[in-house]
Image (cartoon, rainbow, N blue to C red; front, top):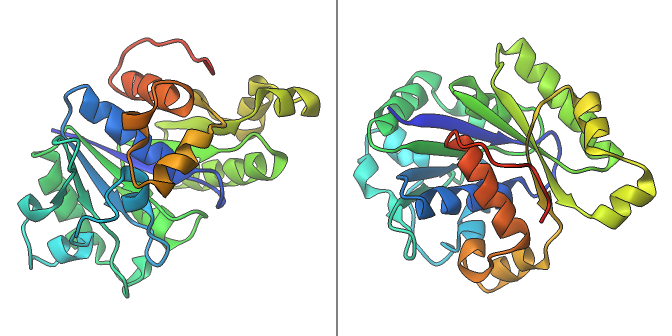
Length: 245
């Protein structure tokens, strides 16, 4: 059975969606079958991060409602192992039937090694919908004080939901800036109360890849791309050192 992973953030601007896409691409490179689901109704951008903005895609609600089969999910043009469902346009997360969503996710488990849910930022209905049935939570934060505070708040909400398998990714890390601010990785972990899954450096290739509608891992082997590969290996259960380079 496949593993369901919710990729969350306590606030916008952490680069959560780029991290989600990078992890999916890395898992596909390692031979895994991955289903990516954009749960961010109204602000859906996972297709851009995956390099699939020009690929027509069903919404996850189309499949949940029984109108379409899971086999009709969009296939990535460069990564055969990645399938994609976008977010519905006009139905909010609070209006998604939880039982139908659960049944859909259980069906996906039998077809994919990993199902990644890219949730909307914040701790509202979309956050809770993605987290509710997840086996593992990846909480993406920045190293700045506002991001750390919001990550801590998100961690508290997840704890109240009974979620214990929560790991943190610190994204957009600028070593010089972090040093100037006097912040260490241990500081971020202490303030958020979460163990670390990975560090992702600030990398202009993330923006360039989105601008040229290309997957990050197809155009780069260093920086954020290398970090996403390390995170994917840890998700697979491999022991990989946490580092920036």
